[in-house]
Image 1 (cartoon, rainbow, N blue to C red):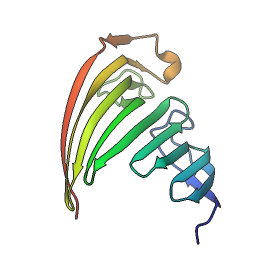
Image 2: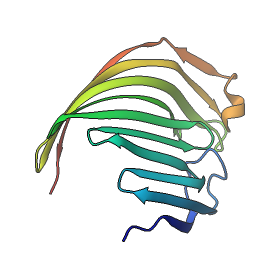
Image 3: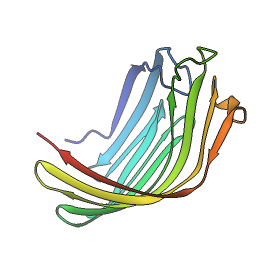
Image 4: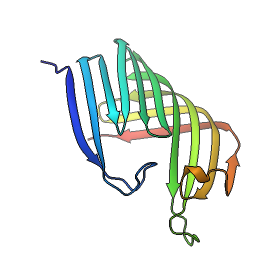
Length: 168
């Protein structure tokens, strides 16, 4: 029997977070899944949805506050070949050696439009993707509010990625 609604309580700890970095953050999510074809998770610290309007098509979207967005459309041409298109708004940060202020980090933000093809066998997967990265920049500071100080903007441009994965 499939459960329609589930309440998930938890605690999230991360020193890599745009909010409450380094502090334990309580989380609460409602999971609504009326069928194998639809799952909605609404709450904090993230919200996501996965929907299969028909057998070969999957739509996925995830939002993590404050600036992380992922959306993907996947079409199964035939088993095990799938093609996909997506959008990502993501970031990363680093602790630079010899920085003047120990609380400062080097941040990187970018947005990407991506398309690709994936071929999965039982224990090996192959993937080739490409797209366009835009709105890319680095800055050093305490948080996103410092994004206009000590900033380096990167040109928009295309990218290509190849992956081979092994599963056991």
